[in-house]
Amino acid sequence: SINSRGAKIATEPTPTGTPTGTSTSTPTPTRITNTKVVDRRGALTSFGLVPLLWSQGSFIATAKVSIKPEAAFNNLVKARKELDAASTYLANKDIENLKEYLNQDAVNINNYEENAGVLLASKQLDVESKMAIGTIRRYGVGADVIIMYGGLKADLEEDNEDMNYANLSKSLKRTTDSLDEVISICRSNGF
Image (cartoon, rainbow, N blue to C red; front, side, top):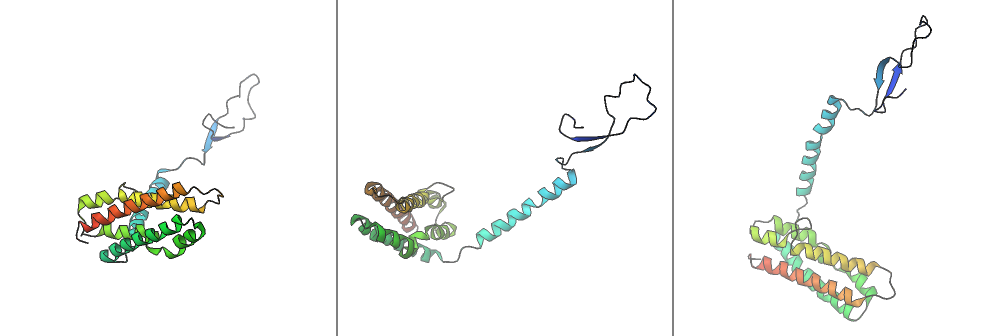
């Protein structure tokens, strides 16, 4: 039988000497077997590993910085030049070469997040500048670069016969403007 909470109840058999006319409709529970219930020890053991896993994840995330802040800033300046080259492909409506350029040759703009992360982790930027640049998680002009460039690449990946050049041009312009703002913030901090 099953109780009101869905747990299985094992019952004892009715004794053989039960007088007739006696009601035996309610079984006598002997043991409840519910596999959905977690005991205290199991819960504490499981939840006790969470801080350990979090600490391992944060250690891995901080070990990613592999370039110096000056090199990261120079990569952002190169990324700006890559966006200029991309705009010439777009002006000529050469979509296939634009796709190839952005996927293979535009190394610095494709690594924007890593370069911006190095700059944000450096001590050369003040707190206000770091907040103004921001990240994808904490909104700022750096997030605009990531979002607009991602939108541009997504629009280019669509197999569409009627490519909307106006939207592509807007995305590229917004990416360029946001990157210019990031570069000017870095320059105002001595880069």
